[in-house]
Image 1 (spheres, chains in turn red, brown):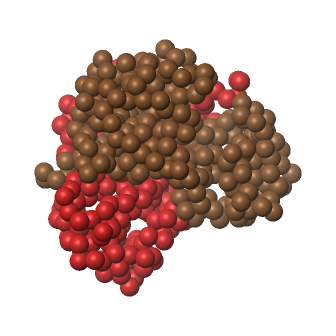
Image 2: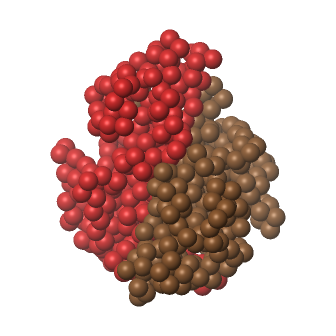
Length: 242
Length: 242
């Protein structure tokens, strides 16, 4: 049976890959991915055959990878972060249905975790991950999830908080969350996680509403217990009081 | 400035650690953790000094680690999965407040990701992570989060779905979710992620209600789009139709 790997490479730097991800890429003959992430992997493994398609041509890229696997090649499809969180694992499994190929998914550190570590520990307790991109999801559904996640007092990680086309989406998300959480709620933003220029900032939900996020930002909204401690964003679980 | 590392070691096997986690443990003189996870790390690094306390003595263990760091030792506190998701990062940051020690958190692959990879891609779209342990959280708060997460159509990962004392908690959680999601909702259970005896099962929400989970299980509940494909649990993001 032919085998196809879908590999989460983490936030970018080699150090934040899992050993399994690194070893799978080492063994692969063909690596398929989106330009930016392929460039990162190419630095480590310049000698491989690369299948690259632009953004929004994800399905074409996965079909090319499946075809290469069907030819008996060892193929890895890469995703940034975790392959299963807004990544390629689901699409590859859909497209491989009924074909003579076994799909193995290799997980990686998604931005909620790698960005959370930079801030401190914003997601210690129950949390939700929500993407503000309405490219593949109706905005009404995103709004509903924001509202209910805030009402449930989840810590929240927001992916894709902004783009040129969606410059005011973070503000709109904060306005919805502010109907359920106080302005003083502790929030944080991490930029360029695991890459050059990595930075973080802790702020209130009121300040976040006016923050200019960019496409390299991941946003964290605390729950009712989240505090700023020594400049870090920390959600206690309650161990201290046991 | 003294430095203290809080390291997420992933699900258990060395291959699923990040390079950064492995290198940090290599360099550490002292490693602090809970018995089961210390045993896993001890196999890799038998020569270290280990600080071990039983479950529910987490604060004592972190204080011992901070004291060792204040003596100038290189210390790593380990957590299974990610150090920030129900892990030790928050507690260490709380207890280190005002002390002459800088805390660096090193993230790892949490069970929502490593277990998700075994099942396929259950959490491709927006998702929530909820622990069913009411040791540190009132059950009413957990119930509210289950209900609102189901109403928001999140994919859901349930941690700590069962224990001796809480044998019927998964059933109670499913009953709440069934008020918002149909019985046919695709669900999955992964046991012993990244360890000997790793296994997975895909089932419906109606079947999950009667499933006997144990403390080595992580449970996944699909959203309205989740499907079973070739025996795997897959939540499409929508790329296929672009």
